[in-house]
Image (cartoon, rainbow, N blue to C red; front, side):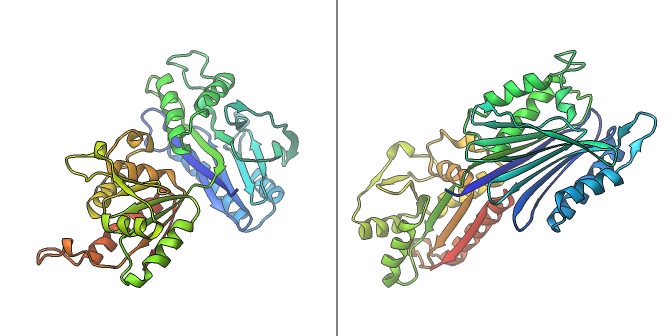
Length: 383
């Protein structure tokens, strides 16, 4: 099983502040994924500059291969401390997850991160040490499928002060809240939105401090293959269908002609789902062994519009039309491979329309770009 790191960040600005005083930097090195969260002292522009400096310094040094101990030494020695309040001008948490399944967590003057497995918090012991006059907490632990890690700034711990709870949300209540929302199959982005939304509600929509969360969910990588249109050479039909069908993960077929080629070669039957009828979008069909079969160009065009609008997976989960179902599958996947057939469809040809393949290529490329911007790995192959 290949593990996937589903990561999302969400900020809550202090009331009437345009900039968040917290910063997050996410980077990849040859052997690890790195997350740095920093909370700048105070709020606004000054805090943002200090926290941005911290996260970029740490991420750049770690990505360049500098050992974590040296990075911590550099940060602790470089970042100033307010002489009046005896507080660090910026605090930081660093999470480094290595390709071998081990994680290293460092916390410097920041709230303890939450670590859990499925619906339960998991205790991970921290060791304390002093580096350049600052107390550092560190932990080294293994990760596995179903684990999750949440980094946060103290503005979320204080949520409720001046609003719902005089003493703030607090570490214990946040822990219980995270256990409840981690029970769901929601992605990291949805969980981060719910976390920050609840914090804002506790602040009565007037946050007294900046708040930031980083949600990291460790799960099995979700793979999807999509076949769009028949190959330009009919002699390649069998090879393309066999390649598509033997691929790992979920399988989606777009286009009636393409679906008929698939069922003919695989010896399957196709049945149209009339319950999925929509005024604008043709119905879907069912084929044994294929997760979703939709109409082609029209469904793809509507799918592009849904993705472009930023629709969430949960918003389309229960819709029956083909574009919503296709959008749901694409938002579900981490790695998407699209096989695009270059054959022309005579039904789409007229003096007023561009060549079928050019239109299909444009739609697929736009869809690929939109999905890539969401952090998905998308590859396109033409046949």
